Length: 362
Image 1 (cartoon, rainbow, N blue to C red):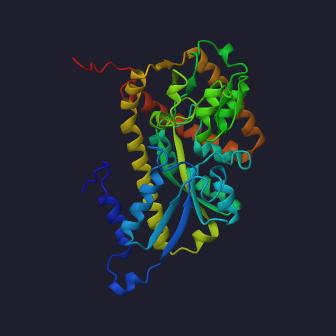
Image 2 (image 1 turned 135 degrees about the horizontal axis):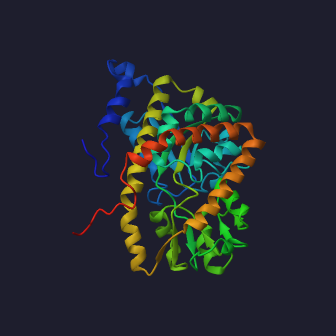
Image 3 (image 1 turned 120 degrees about the horizontal axis):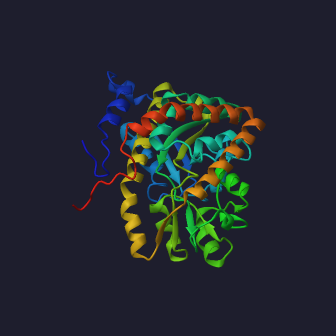
């Protein structure tokens, strides 16, 4: 059973359907019903960023026979898009869907689960979350805030940003007015950049009017939809600051504990499928977008080793400082780095080099 989006729903249907296997019809009908509104941090129209939770919601409704309805709400229609964690924690809403990192000021360690500069890529991050203790650490961090956070999406690297002029030296970073979020923003500030945090919907105008000199936001499909190529023509890669962008279904812990075990299992399974969906969908679309950018006169700029090294040195400075200040931050970062080090021989030798010449077109 292959769906047109390229993801097989057979495994998900089997796994989720097993919760009702062997039950008489009357017993199945007695299972728990869930009706939650789920505000999102990103619009559902943002391809490969905002459309994962709607897909998860659809799969849950299908697999549960309509018993589990997680109705997504567009940003700002229920609560401000950057306040999802706070509102779920306080019980103002039962659940919400967001990139983990906007609560960086309140719970610094959470930003590591959203993205780590020079850190784990999507498949690597998933491996760490599921098999190297990531979810256990996250559960420990979230419990005092009365939140259950379920890993529910991971997408390909973001671009390093849109600039009016190409970056050719570290000196150009001084005073540069730049939009960034999470750990990456603090690292950029370490190098003298003037960093501000603005939501995606405000970035085009800020870039057009000079409020910002440059901006990053997401991966190419999303950046294309937001129109940045119309006001800045130098698209810088790679996305060193966010090798993966990881999103979560936040659930108020009291609401989560009120769920029956089979309902919790279905939600967790659907989010696991959502991770696979998001990784696959985001990776599938980016090559074609880069071709369209070039057709629009955009120059794809590879950041020099000199500038990348400066960012990496600043990353080490910030991470060491934050780890010394916050024991939990330090434990999470150490766990990620230990896995990254363990994985590195396989990463270097198990795959073809990224600059390998595939001789396309011959």
